[in-house]
Image (cartoon, rainbow, N blue to C red; front, side, top):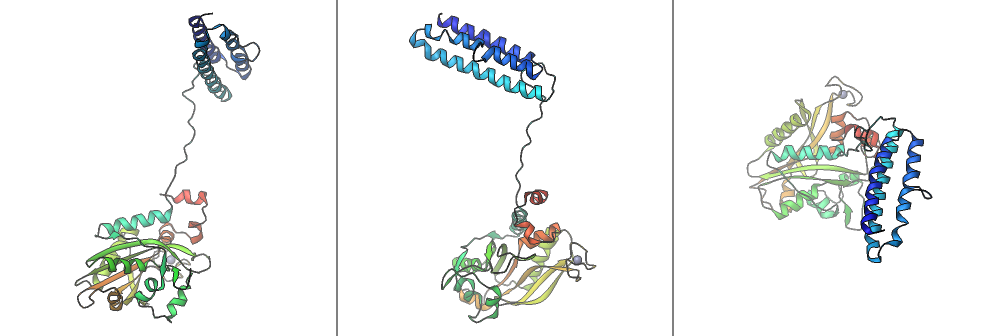
Length: 342
Ligand SMILES: [Zn+2]
């Protein structure tokens, strides 16, 4: 047999095999077609391959490749036809274009990530840029520079995870405020999102590691009214038009300090178990930056004032989606996360 005759026979087999496979409409007919074309003992492809040794040695490699090509086309046609026959489809081609496609798995962003990105977007419009810092910090950056005296009860309240004598996992993203003020002169407007660590046990509203977002503005002539207007603007953007209120509070690094509440998202102010019947839910801790914090990083506290705020995006996600338990956000239960993924 010449190489031309060999390739001609392969072509003829290719065409007749595809027609045969396409005409099979039951698994039994398909099995007969398979045996007739590529069966081990009496297959037509095998019969053609018996002529391979009669070809010139330099032609055998190309002929072998042609055989493999035809064989893989036939096997693909058999597999396609088999799934069409199994699905009971009546078709007139080896390729059933009406078969439903395999369902694609759609990825989504975690609700906490969605909240962080939304918060960043709202504050970006107000001129804030994002600043990041290390999660392992020194006591000075995490506490001392923020006006925590070494025996301050707030330090015990934080229940810090220490890595060494002077190094710890940051308990808030406030060290990023300190690092930013050391590096850049005012005016400053930053947003500092990141993970923070506390030794809290894991319960319905506390996790040992959680995301936090803080904001800082330092400039000449800015005061509490700017802080209040900014946070109120944020609440109305994030939750839709909502009532807000400010309550006096205490933080070592701000003076005066205030917490901002939004009207309970679940009962709309009438009182329910989620808001402990107050009708309000806390969203921000905030205040005017304490002059000692400005002085610790060399900012002239006579000339500049600053305000700062902090929030937990997981808590904001709980409020937004009406979740009863913060652990839902960290349990990696896809059935839950898929429902609210962005
Ligand atoms: Zn309520």
